[in-house]
Length: 120
Image (cartoon, rainbow, N blue to C red; front, side, top):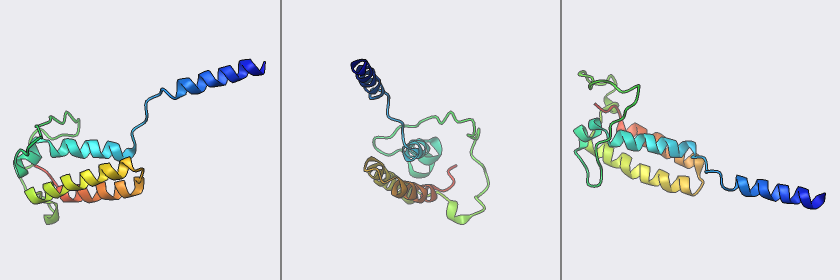
């Protein structure tokens, strides 16, 4: 009986070990912000950077066209320098996420989002 239970437990553990690893919430944020930085709005602000392509967001929250007015908060205006800094911060967040530093990754992503501001 013990042999049957240990074989069953071994089979269960072997089966569970093949399940896909769940992405961290920080990894999901990184993917979202990377898509924003490859959007038409970011390219309008910073130009098309080497190695990047225009991605369609296909988000149900996406606007049909960019708002015509200026953001109510002047600090939210996107610039090419802010987008470049956000890309650098995303690289740092990826490293932090790989190292298992969830809190540091989330803090870095918050900073990156602030740098991006309101894209057209």
